[in-house]
Image: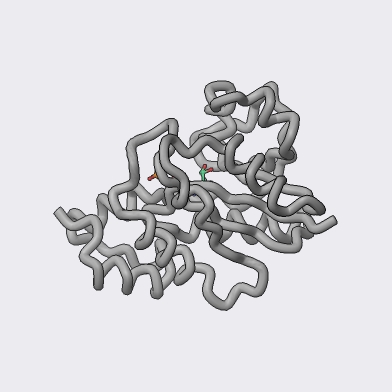
Length: 188
Ligand code: ATP
């Protein structure tokens, strides 16, 4: 069985927190691949500031050169709210001999009880939780924990910095920074 990590998020923009997190899980669980899945309409927060095509492009730029990281646009092609359970069911149908691991940070671990059809979801996929500053990993759900060095970077921080003409160097990759600048994303 192939072992694939699924990493859902808005990635608006992707940053080093995401990349470090994906790499730690990839290594600890000895996954074959990690698929980054940009969400279209997140159920739990506002839609992203930048469109799906640009966010997909930024993820591709962020993971370039990694032999096992991919982007999967499955949620961008679906209308309505992007429920994880629909994504998992579709992927399990499309890739039968595959064990999927759904990767989430501490804030999402705390939020799990509110996820759409969480009990069914918990039955069909293994959650992998990664620690995030300011959030606990306590949950009633069965999650496999992976440690990462605490990184207090968020996409919100990067968007705010761009809007205030502050530096985002070393918060995301140079390639992502180029796209943000070229496409004039997040400016006030
Ligand atoms: P925003 O600031 O726009 O809410 P974000 O930085 O939280 O965005 P998302 O794309 O929403 O990024 O996050 C995708 C996933 O990555 C979520 O499961 C989130 O918990 C996790 N994550 C993001 N940043 C970190 C981080 N610095 N440490 C640990 N987990 C993180």
